[in-house]
Image (tube, rainbow, N blue to C red; front, side, top):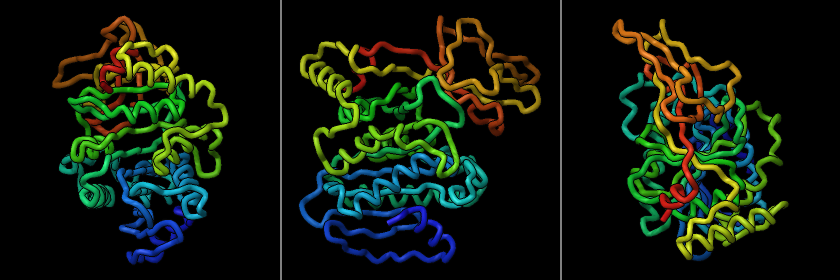
Amino acid sequence: MDMITELKLQLQTKEINLTPKTETRLTYRWLDVGVLELLPNQGNVQSAIVISAGIHGNETAPIELLNQLIQRLFAGALPLNVALLVILGNPEAILAGTRYVQDDLNRMFSGKLTQFKPSSETKRAQSLESLVRQFYESHTNCTKMHFDMHTAIRASHYPKFVLLPYQPNHYAQSLLRFFVQSELDAVVFHNAKGGTFSQFTASEFQAASCTLELGKARPFGQNDLSLYVSILKALENVISANDFIQSPDNSKTKQSLSALDNTLKTNQYNLSDLQMDFFKVHTSLLKQDEKSFKLNVKDDCPNFTLFYQNDCLLEQTIDDVPTRYCVEHEKEWILFPNPKVALGLRAAIMLTQIESSEALGKFI
């Protein structure tokens, strides 16, 4: 099974065979273009897992990783012990090699559709919400997880990081174990609900959801997937329901997992061995005037660039009143700076760093 080939065929023929098909170890069926449900043929599943990629069409590394995962499942090299829904999010944008066709699909979930004109993306957002709802409601007693994989527009001081959607309660400890196994560099906690796919699954179904950012966006065939072996293996671990999997360089990972397990057992916040940094969103910088808007960062400013108190990063005039944003804390880090966003959208996120003890408290 090659999902990219199947995607092209489905779009070209405008036909989808919705009939379930049974392989030796699993049964699968297409639910929509680029949306595939897989169930094991034996045993009762205890987890319902959604893995998505290509919500932004030019973010190809996650698509290639997801394709590898599916190929290993169909080849019998990887056991399937969960209910699995895999999603290639924006088919037309994927084949066009663009971030989106008309508007950003990852801003349209959880009731945000009304902010956009009808388009292929608004239709897709409605379809994905419906299909995910159907999937999770078919497995009401299962543990629910969602991994939405992306790449960033620009380089990053933390090449592999994760954003956690806002939720008022604690996050699942299984997510933290996954982050350690994936050898991620940083974790970012959102401070408010947004219109992202992972926010939708977290809020609507209380799924353990996250948005994974894996390097920089590149064309198909130009990704070094060896950089993401630990993430692929962590995903394999999730869908095969194993407690721990070996990785090519796992001594540090084992050390981190041991430190994490000891911390969870004793409630002693000793996370120096986790080798991850933790941040929380302080504020979002919005583009509110097209003519006067100015984001004072370099065009090649990497994600997680550090700025200091009183550094002026944003200038614009709103209702004839000049406004600006200057760094309010001693140190703040910038994430996703993009002065070219449409009016009213977020041009950057400002972060503050938090201690690992505070971060762990969000998982307990």
